[in-house]
Image: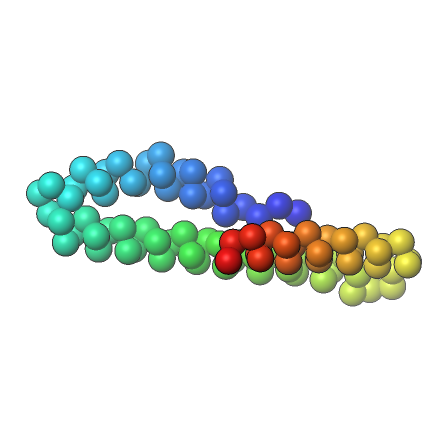
Length: 88
């Protein structure tokens, strides 16, 4: 499963960021406060997305599974961890 962070951040950039930037001229501190609140939303959405993906991964192998299912799960964990490392 692919993380849903990227569509969320695209939505953020296309809808919220221009308004936050425009607000800076008249209310710099308010603009930064809105940016901080928006960053909090993105972080929460990101963490929730990672937790859903991790739960789905666990569900794929946590019951009676074949060796092939376990091999696939291992590959999916490797990809998942690789994406996380790429964010660091």
